[in-house]
Every structure is written in structure tokens, then in C-alpha cells.
Length: 500
Image 1 (cartoon, rainbow, N blue to C red):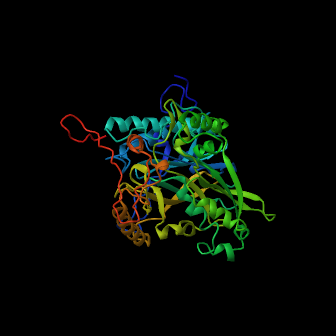
Image 2 (image 1 turned 60 degrees about the vertical axis):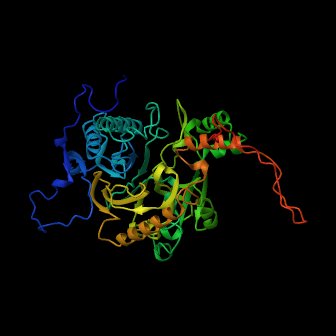
């Protein structure tokens, strides 16, 4: 086994857990302003490296937010992540949180949405990103081992790459990084984190084409004096390398040719991307974003010259069926994306960013990853239910960019908010839609998008052999009955029809 580039060299914990300040202890020694709290959410505990959190003269350095999400094994199928699995992942990261003598994450939280575990933290520019990804891969692997020990469903499900190859992109987990601003004054930065389970990256297009594009969701586009009044620049990525391979000449049924072409497209981690401007290119943006194939992967603010200024929105714009393993190109899981975005100032407010979800739109995913269904906005650390999804969570983090500390958290879809009414309506619509349509479209996806489809491929191949080409049934104009010689049904011994 190669030497790990993180942690201590002697294999002992590099950082004891006592070296972290935990937000659960924030009120220790302080007067209690309330005698009892009504629980409205499963608020995550914030771990912050003490020597940085309480530094008197924090360095003015470039910092980054990183959010990673992965299904390493779920309870009772695909419904929720086990607390023990989350704790194993957290412990592994916290104890090995060192790169060249410096902490990798100065502050982090560990959460779950459905059965996907999420790790969100702040890093400095001194951190080697490939080392961070190696730490994350090994931590998630440790979580998968614990899931297997507990007998959970699908241990290591999203760790689809055969081994860690230098970064998480193309390995299975959804992971994004967003550079935090560097400024001497005003150390506060609001960062919005969104996780979705049982759906695909296209679902996040509802964020991008809402508050960043339309004043109906964000009045700041019209009345704000910040950079917001100039609109935004969006980078839209074509995620479907299979479709790109077909467009390049590979036959849809020629799997060997498809795989070869997709592998060429994946070399160098290249992406097919278009840059469009909001609001000038509104129709083009809306036209592309109607398809699962195209996803707004990044959004930039605009300078006074109308060019790209600051990156403030990133999505894990990948699809699992683009990942090559020893078994070929993988297609399992609906990709379950993660998003990081700035809020306030030059960016929409959190409530503006989340507002498109109030209409309970339908997204691809749900049970077996093969349905369309209304997404359910849920508090962080919630499980799926009712055909197992799809759900979305959104939290905002108040981040001190000088110390790298996550100071406080707000759950945007918390209980006791108007989102309770949205959940009721989304649930009513979902029940009606699924029960009305069942296996039929539009409740199910097009067969190319069905995930667990090997059984259907076998069934369809068998049925295709039974189809025959013959003249259609016709009727004579003199009133005689139409006729056609029927082909006898194949039989088995005893004369009973054979069920082909």
C-alpha cells in the first residue's frame, strides 16, 4: 500500500478529537436565554480546528468551500444514512485532517440527505486538493466498510471507480469546490449548500433559471444596486457522453462502439460546455435547461464591462454512466448532485434561490431511478419515503473567511415554516401522479434513462423475436369479413401454449 499523503506518518491519529471546538458546546458557561427548545431540524454539529477558530490575527488567505456527497450504504434500502456510518466518516476525517503539518479542513460538518452522506468544509489555499480528495475517498471507504458490517443496503454504492486515481471527479462521489472571496473588511460570507437524493444534476436547473434569471423569483435583478443588476454569466455543460457518441457516428445498439467513443470523450476530463449570458440569452438558457442532458454547472457575476467577475455557483455536473470501470461504463444511481452557491450581496438571498421549489416541480429519479416525480423539500438529515424520493435539502452557512470557521447554520426547509405547506402539496401531487400512471410514461422515464433496466432489456429482446412483419388486417368493401391466417401459438408437450 502506498504511503498516504495526509495524516501522521506513524499511523496514529494526527489530530485528537479534543483539538476541535464543537458547536454543540457553544453555550457552555453562558447564560441560557431559553429554558427549552422546540426541535425543528436535526441541526448538524460544526467541528472547527481550535487554533484557527480562536486565532487573534487570522491570515488573509484564499479559502475554499468543498462539499462532497456519496451513498456508501443505506438503511432499509435507500431511505436514510446510518448515524454510525456518518460518525465513522467524521472520525476518520477529523483524526487524519493534516496536510504537511497544517489542518486540511479548518471547519466542517457531516450531514445526510436521504441515504447520502455529505461532508462540507472550509480549506485554505495551502491545501493540496488531490490530498483532500484522497482523504475523502478513504473516509468514504471506511464508511462503506462500516455499512457492510451493519448489513446496510448497497455498501460503497457510489464508490464506482476501481480505485482512487488522484481526484474524486469521475470516481462516483459528487464533489464541488467554490473559492471564497478574499477581502480585508467584512469577514462574513453566506454560503448556500444544497443536496439532492434520488434525482439528477438537471434538477438544480430550477435554482439557476429562477433567482439568477427571472425577477419573479428575485426582485433584486430589477431593484438592487449591486452587481446583480447586470445579470449573470452561466456555463452550461452537456452531460450525456452517450448521446455525444451517437452524434459522432456510433450506433445506439453497438455497445462496443459507444464505449470506445465515450472513453475518448472522457480522456483528459474534458467537458462540452457553452457560455450564455443572463438575461440576454434567456430563451437559449431556458431551451437547454429543459433537458436532462444540459445542466447549469457554474454561474459568474458580471463586471461593469459585462464580463465574468466572481464565481458564485457550482454544481456537481457529472453523470455516473460516464464513469469507466472494469465492467464497462457504469450507470447506477441517479447521480444525486450537490451545489454550493453564495447568497446575499451580489447574489440572490437564500429564500430567493430556493423559491422555485415552492411549485413542487417534477424531476427524474425516484424509486429505482426510473421515474418522474415531484421533489420534496426536506430539512437536512431527513430520510426519503414513499417510493424512496426524490428529496432536496438546503442549508446556509455563515462563514468567517478570515478564520475559516463555519459560525452558524440555518436550515432553509426547516419544520414550522411555509415549506410545511409545500411538502403537503408535493406529497398530494406525488401520490396522485404515481398511482394514476404506475409503470406507464410519463411516470416512468424513457427506456434509455431507466436505471435498473437489464431485466427490461432481456424482456424486450425476447419480445422482439416474436414480432413479425405482415400485411395489416383489411376489410372487403362488399361487407365480407376481413381475414388473415393466424400463426399457431408455439406449444409444449401436452398441447399447452408455450410462454415464450
